[in-house]
Image 1 (spheres, helix red, strand yellow):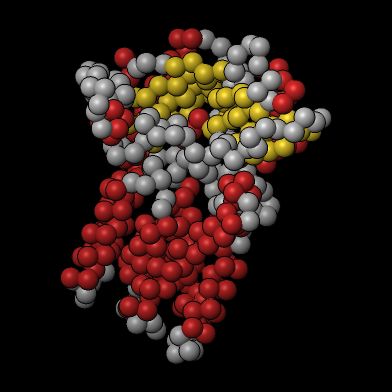
Image 2 (image 1 turned 120 degrees about the vertical axis):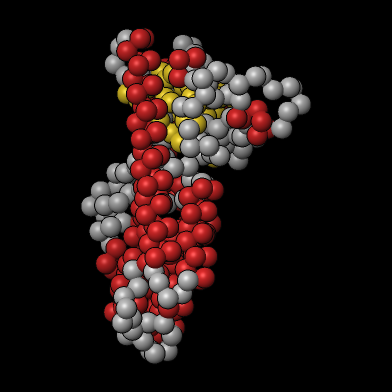
Length: 345
């Protein structure tokens, strides 16, 4: 979820949970909730150190429910000092805990995944019901905050907005399960061992990327859970959004694309070797649905590039692409587009 939506959700939750005899002024309580809910994304500073470090550690330490009490107390004391000790630190810590919790929940429902149990475990937890930027999700929060501003004597608008938000995510969860069912039906038709993933898509909650994962390949389809017929093919000069929306097909008419995990038969042995090398260990830990998408140069100076198919989006270049280039006998990791022009031999 984008940081602004996180912050607004913290303000809304702070208002919805405000006790009748609050020791904090309402505005203070909501601003604390706002900034506390934005706090977990402070790990963006790691992107200035190394983009790969940020990619593989984002939604880690600052998003951990194990460390949540520590962050809540730390923020509570920070706000206590910033507000010149005018209010007790404990209610500030409680509101901080609520704000951080709202952020963590908002990230768990996206496809990126969240390391909830750091430092005990670096496993990423995800229930991918919601696209990372969801205008409907954000709009419900904004309307709740507007209602809270118009009807200041009651928590009802904020509580209603949180209820609607929960119902909306629940509805998306139902759609997610329907998309997974589409994948299982296709997997049964093609046979073999398969695992099914469904990733939410932007703009329309009924649109899903369904991925059937097999040991060395994937089958992908863009599925619309509300269309009964395929959308007409857009003209060649159509806006990218129109082209994007046109690719989602009814489940029974889905167009499945086959993607080899390690590329063509001639490239597969080397691609597998590179993928399992120490150079890509960090990226390997991150990528859920890795696939080779390019190989540059001869075998003695080759670069092999991987992408994570869960971020496939029609009309936009896929993010989070990394690979390794041969440097003598060693492999060196690079972000796609930042590799050396000619790997050293």
